[in-house]
Picture 1 (cartoon, helix red, strand yellow):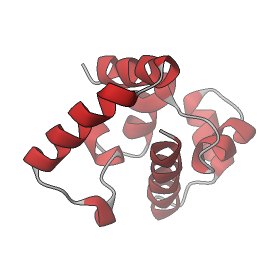
Picture 2 (cartoon, helix red, strand yellow):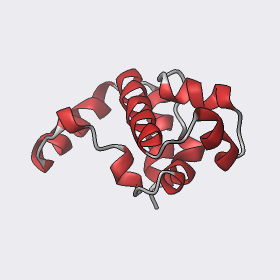
Picture 3 (tube, rainbow, N blue to C red):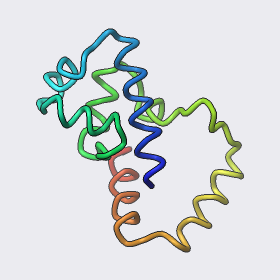
Picture 4 (cartoon, rainbow, N blue to C red):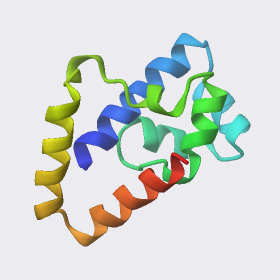
Length: 105
């Protein structure tokens, strides 16, 4: 999961800078502070409670936040990877995965 946090953070930073927003600008839109945005973009914090708001602020869909160009895999590969990962996932990561999945509705 640590890798996902870092990839998502880089993606958010890329989208934010493309819109010419500072971390402070995005923080103001989300009602948080700049340090929180910095932690998200550095992959320290996963923004589970802010996912929808970040997508909206950056004018992208929720799935677009997770479009990591170098990780283009077909659906079969993705499903197999997820199933295999569930066999070894920690309770903490399972909780995080559950919150992410639930926030997509």
